[in-house]
Image (cartoon, rainbow, N blue to C red; front, side):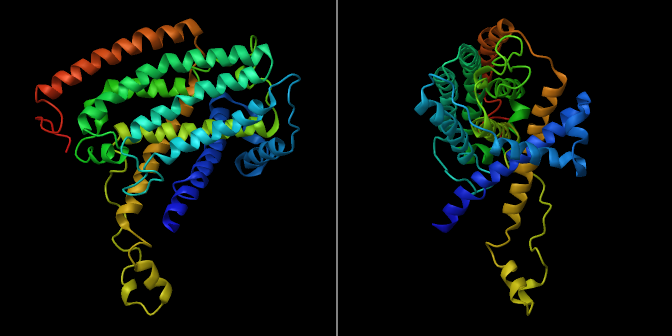
Amino acid sequence: MHTTLFKAAVFPGFVFAALIAAVTIFVERKLLAKMQLRVGPLYAGKVEGIFQLLADGLKLLTKEIIVPSGADKPIFWLAPIMFVATAAAVVALIPVAPGWVVADVDVGLIAVFAILGFFPLIALLFSWASNSKYPFIGGLRALHQMIAFEIPFFLSALPVVLLSSSLNLTEIARSQYMIWNIFLLPINAFVFFISSLAELERIPFDLPEAESEIVAGWLTETTGMIYGLIQLGSYLKLYALAGLFVILFLGGWYGPQIFPPELIPGAHESNLPLLQMLALDGVYNAITVNSVFWFLIKTIFIIFLMLVIRGINPRIRIDILLHTGWYKLIVLTFINLFVVLMLIYGGIIGPEGVISIR
């Protein structure tokens, strides 16, 4: 009971995900500032500009929330909360170590995709509720973009299910004990990563925004903590999708064992109660600590890749984006799916194949 509450609230639950989101915001601003020579995030405040982040947070907390005239108030207030709750629900399904997941669902992968399907509807509802043409145009663009990339997004994960013979995310990670899926399914990993960027509305797929046309897209009429909540949800979603990529393609939590079996050697024989307590099973578990460490290292690496792409790529046109999603990526994933099926039934890869993943 207490362990379940701890997992849901603290680790790997909402507090941990929110902390990751806060650190990601700071690192992203510093990284882009160095890459693009932005003065503010580089030099504002002391200690590498950390006070800039605190100032921005204080501004969001104290800024007046303005509700547009004629807005549908219940939906306008409810949509940002739904956005954060939906992102947190995805986080709850991502395991960070054996047994360390808030909700270990047998059909976890389907549940993740089902929850992700709510984001386009929330964006469209919020933009419509704002009673302004600019957010509504941005909401329509977000809807078109997310739907265009959701099909290749789902199809790219299907061969992973075929290889692992499971929809449970923990079992999918365990199936990569010998070989990571990215070595067997590199095309799927590439499509999944590109589709994740589109799902997150990040450059070069930030088409819902356009300074000269629709300003800040479906967020044009948001102020104060409404904007802050949606940004929190966006970064929770970023962490969740990076973690999902690690589970599906990078072997989950597997990595060399670098932590000692005992945190403090000889603690069992110590006369100090604290050392004896640390030596007890459950307080320090070398396998769990090692698993969490490798999962976080891999997830941070994927997040870093997503941040770097934002700093070095320009925005593409919406017609190119839709053509890429509906034609190129869908066709590529279908062809790759048939190739993977042929390799599995031909006995080349898979649980019973020449190249076994178990």
